[in-house]
Amino acid sequence: MTDTLQTASRPGLEPSAPPHAPHREPPLGRGRGLRAFLSVIGPAIVASVAYVDPGNYVTNIQAGARYGYALLWVVLLSNLIAMLFQSWAARLGIVSGRNLAELSRERFPGVPAVLMWIGTEIAAMATDLAEFVGGALGVSLLTHCSLMIGMVAMGVGTMALLQLQGRGFRPIERAIGALVAIICVSYALELLIVPVDWPSALRGSLLPSMPDGAAVSLSIALVGATVMPHAIYLHSALFRDRPVPGSDAERARIVRFSDREVVLALSTVGLVNMAMVVLAAHFHAAHPDIDSIAVAYRTLDPLLGRAAALLFLLSLLASGLSSSVVGTMAGQVVMQGFVGFRIPVWVRRVLTMLPAFVVIGLGTDVTQTLVWSQIVLSFVLPLPMITLLMFSRSEAIMGRFRMSRRVLVLAGCMAGFVLVLNVVLLLQAAGLMPG
Image (tube, rainbow, N blue to C red; front, side, top):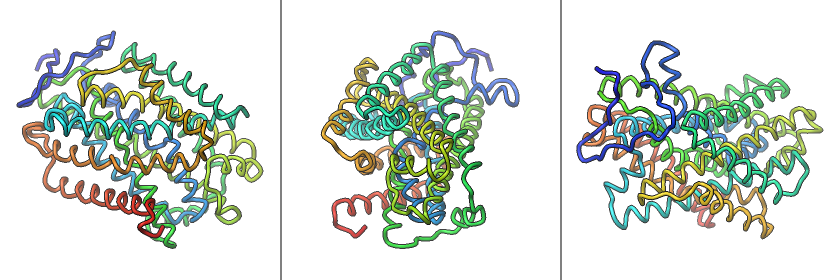
């Protein structure tokens, strides 16, 4: 085995594009122990941002305030589902040298690919709407400025971070990792401030329960807002700019490290989501009607002190900023993969910001905007989940790394569970089922 990495290839696939990072990276996964692991990590941390975006804040706050610890098991289950799909999205990119959008265009050319692209772009805009507005709300509450000014500040901050892409993949990954760290540390400190009933929290995490009919609807929202289409597409593309493994032995080593990173990154953000519910559960006895980020923040200050309220806002701001950057990156991947071209990043950033300015300019309720953005995602979620399973099972694409029948059955059950919940959510939104 030589140290020169070659382009990965599989029957029927074109070689991937050469890396465009200005500095050559050493081969991935070489060496021993922590050093080898550190050469691979980054993609799962970037993808994990989708699981702590402002949309998650809303559903987690509602779950904790209304039902205490009772729905923690839903958050845990959602995270386990996300781990499986994100690990296979990464594996698809590592083994095939292509991302999910590119493979979809190759396997479903013409009109089907265009329709998939349009649907995915709509989902990307809905996702970005939630992330952008949520981050702007954090700026507004923190600085006491108007929401419109907060949105302008978010736009400037996002564009500044996106400029790091011109320096290669490491700087942008480190910046996003730092923002994720801020979110995690903020909630770790929150748990030191908030009195937690740990035995009840453990029971709520491990023993499934559904207190009433409204809890069913909220559980659907919790699951439906977790597995994000853009995170699956993006994760499959994040190994593109890295040195490509030249043998199956190298691929196997990188896949092992990638799987470990997925477990580590998504376990961490999964715990953050559970901490959000635990924090909101403190409202359960006195303020069960809290259903928005702004009200939660204003309640935290007199209830737990200024420090708790400021940590909450700091984590929200980091969440909105990081998820807006990642959403823009995912949009570029989707466009280039499905239709073969890309637009300047600032053009995409402006285009995806416009709906947010229009929606807020019309006086739409921020919380409802965040909730409806998650409903829009429900329409598109089946596309990446099903196509990922199809490609992961294909021997022509994955070779000896293809998904086993046992894992396929497990992933199929998970996908079916998520899709059924999303269908119920849509029927409730349409008034065809009680919620």
